[in-house]
Length: 288
Image (cartoon, rainbow, N blue to C red; front, side, top):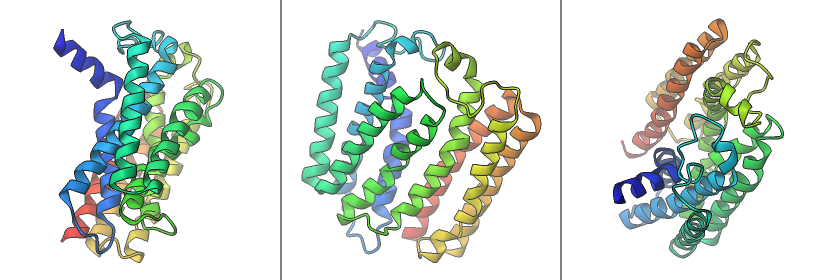
């Protein structure tokens, strides 16, 4: 019983995804020049960011509970499956959101706290309902998906004006399009059942989605030089960023050439590798 409840909450907050999102926030904090390192601050930033992200993912599932019942990949989620009631979910969302907001506000500053709240609202109440109306929802969803690194920078500096964190924002922003479209391609039939418009095309026959994936992944290559210009990476780090971009582009191009589920799945896994690689590159370059 207890183990099932733990699994339910892991599903509710999308545990692995939340960890990756919060990790990017911590990187945005750690790359601050001349940062006075504090393990307590890192832990509190991680905890505060995780709680707000968890609230956003739970809100998404609460709003989409009926749609989740129609899709094979989501029908076992706790709210959709009926293992968790709406009141329990709402209570968790309120506690998690308020606790995360309070940690960022008290431990850091109002800017970081309100940016996290804006990210939560944009994801939950703009991106989530927009998925049933237009494929532009992916563009909207890419904004809160890229904000954590900016929140991390804001937590350490109290400012986001012309900050290097916007470079990380750009990497994550453009990465999200091929990443998400590969997932949406594989889940196209499920999304269609739920009335969600997640691809930039109506059917899978056209190569338009794959072309768009190549286009957005290609932007990551010239972007690789920007951190060096701003002093965030060494030439070695820049080479790693460029190599990661080339690899990502290659998988996107293979998807364009073959335009099938196998290549879409390979692109999806490539996207899972790309983001941690660039985040660790920024982190390692900072401390070496």
